[in-house]
Image 1: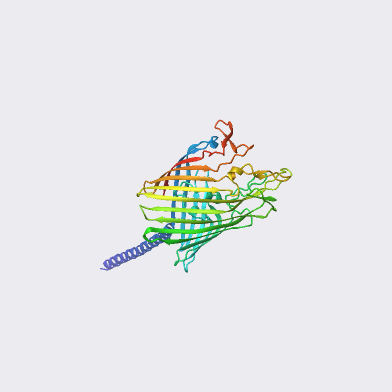
Image 2: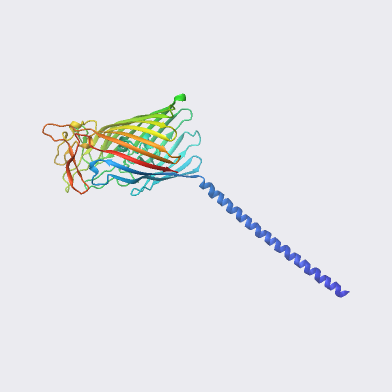
Length: 454
C-alpha cells in the first residue's frame, strides 16, 4: 500500500511537470508567433508607405521617329535625307504633398542628351489662385508652352525658334488664375541668355555654361490670356506677352539695323532686347472640329560682338535689329482618326532693310572695327506648312508634313552682282555662286514622323 502511494505521487509529479513544461512551451510559441505577426504588420506598413509614395509618381513620355528629305543644295556636303530620332523624352511628375509638384524631363535623343525640364511648383492653399515655379521650364508663350507631342506642325514657327532657342530658361515664375474670372497671368524672372551663343575674339562661347547666367542682369517675361466662351459654337482665347531683357556688351560700339546709326558702348553696358506680341486661339465646334490660331511679335533683338585686341586688331560691334514675325494656323479634324493642319509663318529679322539693300548697305571698317555688310541674315522668310495626321490609336500618331520655304529676294543694282553664296558638294568640290538669292533658293523639307506616347 505504501509502495502504491509512492508510485501515485511520482506519477502525479511527472504529469504536473509535463503539463508545466507544455504550458511554458505553448507560451513561448505564442510569444514567438506574436513577434512574427508584429514583424509582418511592420513590413506591411512600410510597404504601404512605399506604395503611397509610388502612387504619387506619374511617368509619361513620347518617342518621335522620323524620315526627312531636304531640298536644298547647301546641304550637299551632308546627307539630304535620313532617318532620325527627333525627341525621346520621359517625364517624371511627383506630387509630394497637396499643392507641391516636382517635374523632371530629360531628352534621350542620340547625340543630344539634355535636360529639358527640372522645376518645382508650389500652389498656395488659401484661395488656390497663385502658384510659384522655380527651376528650368518653358518660357511664357503660347507656341513655346504648347507640347511638342500635340503640336500640329512638326516644329515651331521660325520667329519662335529664333527668339526662344531651346524654348526653356532657368528662373522663377509666378502664375495667377482667379476662380471667378477666366484670366491667366504669368510673370517670369529669367537668366535671359539661355541657348544663345556669344563668342569672344578667340571664338570661345562665353555663354556655354547652361546652368548659370552670362551676366548680372535678369530678363522679365509677362503673359496674360483671357478665355471668352462662345456658347455652343466654341471658345476664343486671346492675350499678349512681352519680353524685357538685355545682354552684356563685350564691344565698344553698337550698330543699328538701319545700317546708318552707330552708338558708342562700354564693355559691360546693357544692350537691350525687348519685344511684345499679341495672340489668339479660336476653337469652333463645327464640321467635326475646327480651330484657327495666330500670333504676331515685333520689337528689337540684339547680338553681342567683342572688342579688338593686340592679337586681333579689328573687333566686332554689337548689333541691334528691329524685327517682326507672325504665324497663322488652320486646323480641321477629318473624322475621329484624321486631322489636317496648315500654317503660314513669316519672320523678318531686320525690318529696316529690304532685299534690294542686301550687300549694298553696310558699315565701313574703321581702325578698330571690321566692316559689316547687310547679308542674307537680313532677309525675310515665309514658310507654308501642310501636315496630315492619322491617329492610329490613343498612343500612336503618324504625320506627313511638307514645308515650302520662300526667302525674300535680293535686288539687282547696276554694277553690283546678285547676292550669291557658295556650297560644297558631297565630293568636296566647292560650287561657286551656287545659291542666287535674287531667286527663291530651294529650302523645302518633307517629314514623315511616327510618334508613340505613353
